[in-house]
Length: 281
Image (spheres, rainbow, N blue to C red):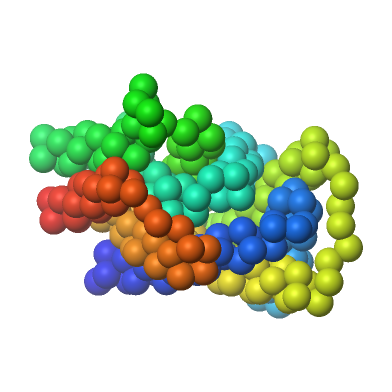
């Protein structure tokens, strides 16, 4: 039952993140991406802080100073920073496809850090998933796009964030994890804005997009922390692939993207590897 609940939370989270990515890409057409991320981070921090106070919880938990939470925070910055750059500088379809390999890294990390048992079939599925990533990247071939490596770096950052969520003390609530995560998101945006500079005053449409990013992003983040703390991590994590379906639809319908054959084939391989992981769990 815990695995089923964890999977449901993961699917809900991935749907939210796909919509969030679309809104960020739309807002960043005119607004600097750093400004978008800072606004998102500040809004999310405020919402989670208020929810924590309403629940009678301190905004900051003492465990924030622990090594596990420090590594989680660094991973959060890396993941958010590089994926924000990826979805604004590369096609949403390819960046989202590469990100689907995150559960494979998480499953590998679960073996290394949490001692979860993985048989040869799971190892084969993990290897197959990375083959799918290589099919999308096409290193050394004419279709290779160096900027796609931004999504690869983000993938490893998010995997570290998810493993850090699992390592969080039981007494640290999802709301407190949310506060920490959005503070790190604000820092990521500030780093980008510090390099690019030039904040722009948003018009009504852009302000509405920013508000939508905060609303959808807060829900998606809360659902993700619930998912990563419910059920077996090697079972729940592969449901991340559900993000790919909606992301592909949004990329085609909203941005007019046309994913090529290699991207589609690599996406299928990654999803299949995730399904194998689920079946063998």
